[in-house]
Image (cartoon, helix red, strand yellow):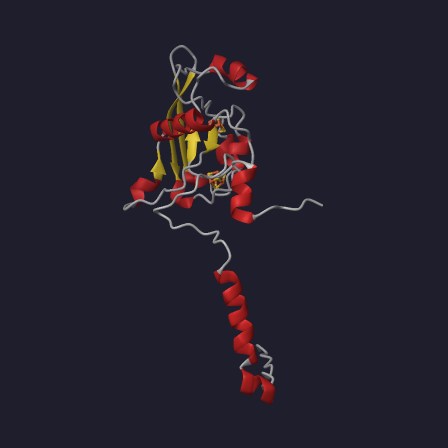
Length: 200
Ligand code: SF4
Ligand code: SF4
């Protein structure tokens, strides 16, 4: 049986009744905040640039000469041309994902014995943007970008394909690869939104 505990609301005192004390207290907070600088933005007219470490829509880094050393080893077993996704079809991202069904990865073995990724689809409608897949990737292929506008008019639009993923990561790296990996774009941006943080 569910027990419900009722708490009596205390009666207002005569002073509170006559001078609207609670109303004045509430208005004091409202007025104080009314003159404070707002931290919200008038989206979609005003758009913030998220920090580089923001977990936005996914991208696939391509083979571009900036791969980690692990790629140099794995690449020997793969058929990947310059400018193509550097995915080595290891399925680590899918293994790490709490919703593995959102991945559709297919690779084939070519007559020369090398492997080629033919399909890499991600149904981002089921993604919770936890970042586990990006942590698991051994070749720094799957990444989060700063793209956060992913709404579509149809469900199919929520599925990202290999080509979309590669284009997205290329665009992201072109704009932000050299930026330091940090939570805020810079200190000025942070203090603009949140004021000075006093470190202990
Ligand atoms: S961000 Fe999380 S939920 Fe989304 S694909 Fe990666 S691991 Fe899966
Ligand atoms: S972890 Fe990286 S290399 Fe492996 S399948 Fe996923 S994206 Fe491709």
